Image (cartoon, rainbow, N blue to C red; front, side, top):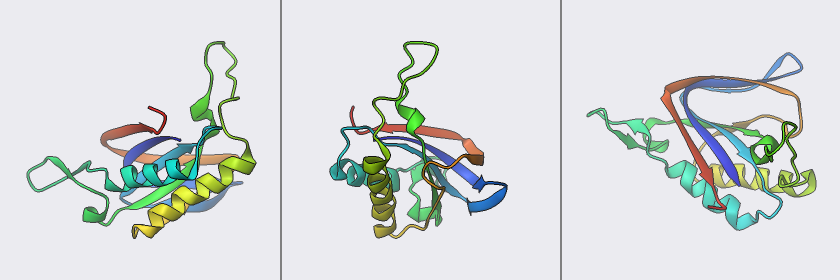
Length: 146
């Protein structure tokens, strides 16, 4: 699984002109599922994201995690994170097919909820408009394959 995690002061998703989900302070997680990913990958990634210490403490150091600041997660599926860019027209054969990707996307969010976090989300496969205010900016990339 591959995740692009952005520390945000706010983020939202619109589908067909309607606000579908929004959060205040927290993480916008763009999540891609590889065709060889497993349930173990989803759990391990949830641990890493939920424990990520990138919020500033009283001394200005990035030392606090999401729980420490009462943050939320907005998770958006993004198969394009596994684009093969060797040519000008990207290929997506490394991205999992929906029948595999959807359960792992749902499992990742469930594992984050199990850790006590509110998780808002987009709609798998929908044409979404995602807006965010990157705080910092702080953006971290996770890849369970490396």
